[in-house]
Amino acid sequence: MQKLADQLDSVNAELSKTQAEANSIQLKYDELDGKAERQNSKHDKELQDLKVQLNKSNKEADSNKKETKRSKDQLLDVKATLKETQDKLSRIAQEKKSLQVQLNTPPTTPSPPPAKVIENGDVQNLDKIKSLEKQITDLKKQMNLKIEE
Image (cartoon, rainbow, N blue to C red; front, side):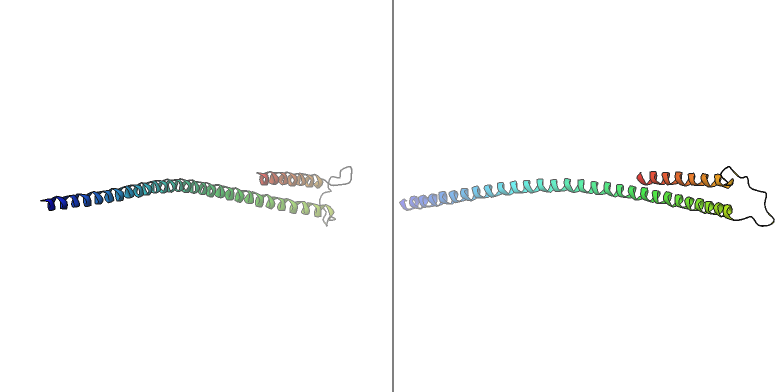
């Protein structure tokens, strides 16, 4: 019987030793598991922060695309207006040149009715030239205003 008691004591000692080892292993596991949980939580937080940052960046990129398109559209409008203004200026300059040529060209036979001569010796078409020059100045001012916008 003593032998059985000794064996029981030996088994109990072995059991206590195994339980102590199991408890030690469980503590290490719990510690590592907690550390892993904290790391996962930290990684999840970092991932969430990156997602928020990505969304903000995407929204900003979309906003920049819209602003760029709006700026391009404005530039195209200004270019079109500039082209129209240049065309008008060209037509006015051509008309002015034509009128100046008429002023400087002696009449051909049969002569047209005489032009009305003003005090300084210029003819009535001079008023037309001055009007065209004013239109040119006004168009240049408009063109400058459009470009500044």
